[in-house]
Image 1 (cartoon, rainbow, N blue to C red):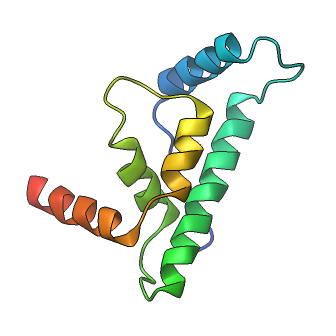
Image 2: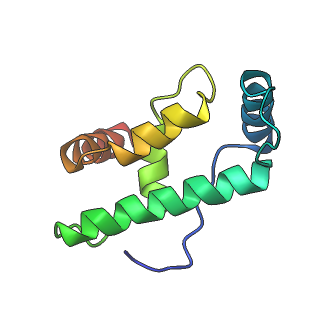
Length: 108
């Protein structure tokens, strides 16, 4: 990883609020819900963990922010449920990330 101070930006505050609201409706029976800040922190930690995993495979320059950009690029219709985001981050493979990175370079 390039640095431990990388911050993962998880969409705009509107996206975060939309995400939190969708979680409230889906988990209304739960006693306590995570706040938007707690969700952002959890997702940020997952992205950094995945970037660290990639560094073990020799891809040392991948950041948590890039992991999030790759995963979130799949969400065209807004933010999915939390379990889907977590699954997408944890199941991301190096090949899929590198394909996304190559395509994002071509789009620029």
